[in-house]
Length: 452
Image (cartoon, rainbow, N blue to C red; front, side):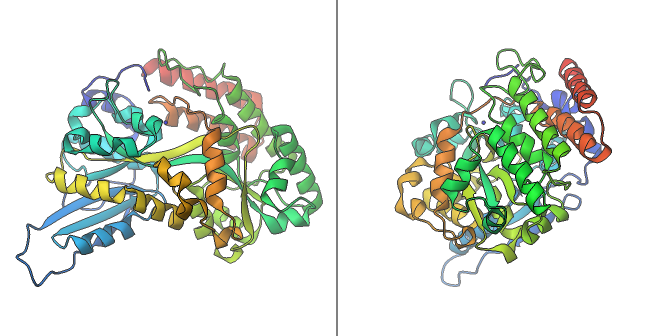
């Protein structure tokens, strides 16, 4: 979501030296094709139906590692009804880093990888050059459907010359503002999407509104530090922490990273950012209870808001972020070479990722499609979400998608980002000095980059 300092084609050597050194701390063991579960990760099985009237086809079992709040298990069940010889075992991992570390460990060991793996864009650089570990989807028919997808999204999973395709594009993650209309009205703010967006259309105005909201209601305006930092960080121009040219660390000289850090510190110190952690029960409960007014996140976050806050249905709307939009996340469906049924696995992911099923994923989980033909489709544009007060949410996501300027991540993005998130956590929870915490995060990031 791209060029970096090329990783060697031998995944084993690099992964064990680099980011996988921490794998021993994960709560998951290697998964195998019989799908013995990894640690605490939940597993569910989509069983085939019996077809009494035809000669049974070869029984095939596919293991599928998914990530996040998706409807892929439901789609797998639908697929197996039409393909009764196929069983698809779906294992969903809650932790993004562990999810990708588990695959790297399996690939390094030469066993334990699934037939199908959902790869998040932030981890693409870890795997894109390990072509010997994955099936080339172009060999399985991907070239025939390439034109269906956003060109920039497709290229994120392609080799430089386009001959190797690692994954099929699923969703994208343009970022927006989710907000409680009842709390906006309580604070004297406009509750309609256009009016609310206009009130916060610069970050300076956002901060002023946030402070006034806290002073009037006694509640934080924003849910948490991580998403606040992300919202500004991802508006960087072209690069965030690392240079596309040579992979060097540039986070300390990227003005948008410092702007994101300082803005989040301001929110902490003025009390308009809530003291909860991303994905925690308290975060979800706060959405439901109205403990804060705003969640800044990508299109797919709609599914989390819905699942966390069922009692607040109809009280939410979506507006645009100040000063542009970022893109957080989006993923791809890949086929590790350990899988023995590449044709059947490809047929399934191509079906699951088609126009109709991307529309279904949007309607049920808010996953923004990577098939642009849907953006003009009345079934997409005219879709009204009762949870968001009957708003045409696709229109807002489409606006945000058009404001995105894709940026380069680099293979060390996730680890580096953690240093800055931890710095902000220390400012929030320990009242630590923001400057010292920034300097320490920069030092850690530089050390990581020099050792990699």
